[in-house]
Amino acid sequence: MSKTVECATHGEQALAYVCHHTFQSLYDGIGRGLFCWTDEGVNAYCDQCAERLEAHGGECTDEFMEFFNGKVLCIQCFERVKQINRRVM
Image (tube, rainbow, N blue to C red; front, side, top):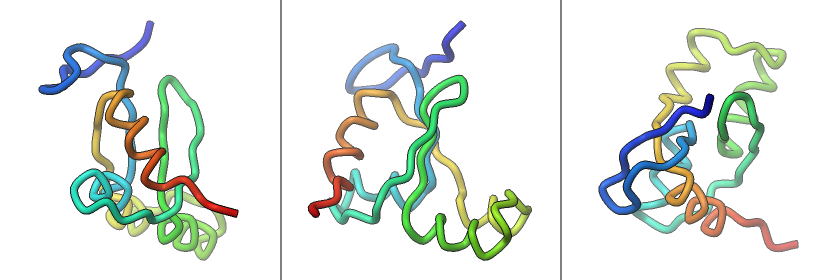
């Protein structure tokens, strides 16, 4: 069973869970990198979180989770986050 969230813009949608840095990109349009995985939904974090996670041996320590400061958004809003954070190679 998929988890959902009620979005003011898109209505009831599947949810995504992202770090507050990538969430902020919805408001300021600044790309911060994007690392995604699926685990009962979509989850993502930015370059800074990736560096912090790597520095802690890949473990989600309390310090990392405080830095991550996760936010929930709908899958449609997450599509916008992906566009903002798309890397140009």
